[in-house]
Amino acid sequence: MTVATKLWTDGPAGDTVRESTRTSLDRLGVDRVDLLYVHRPRGDYEPTETLPALADARDHGYPVVAYGPLAGGRVLDDPVIREIAAANDTGPAAVALAWVLDHDGVVAIPRAASPAHRRANLAAADLSLTSAERRQIDEIDREEELFPE
Image (cartoon, rainbow, N blue to C red; front, side, top):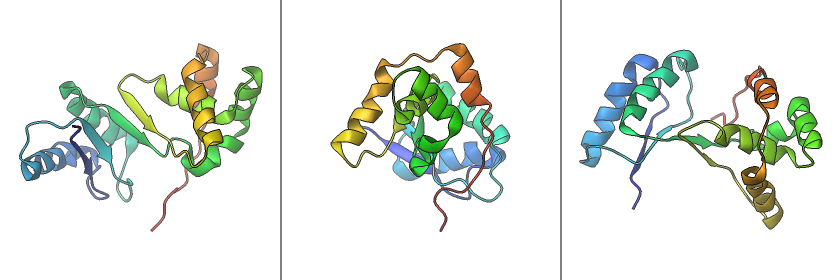
């Protein structure tokens, strides 16, 4: 059995991560969870504050879940991702997922609506990105809301 909880939309600000996590644990009646999600970060969410706060929670071994790691398919059209995919004779989904999975303690849960999508996602397991390719992806600077209300 896997026990998971999430920080709600208004809970991912850096200074509230610990309090929000403790509230969830108390509500569930447990001392720890197996997965801790950030549910649709919005508002005052600042990744440079929230991610280190989540890292403190990972002192308990919590993996981070990359929900929607293909950004609703948007990363498949990114020119950097496409260039790296072509150089590796694979698809953009494999490149994006390989980059996500290259981070310690991160679990990806991509959508796979068809057998072809599942195969494309699974190709990430066979792909080893170079440090230069990882840097290229790290340098992609794009921000847009994926799941607006």
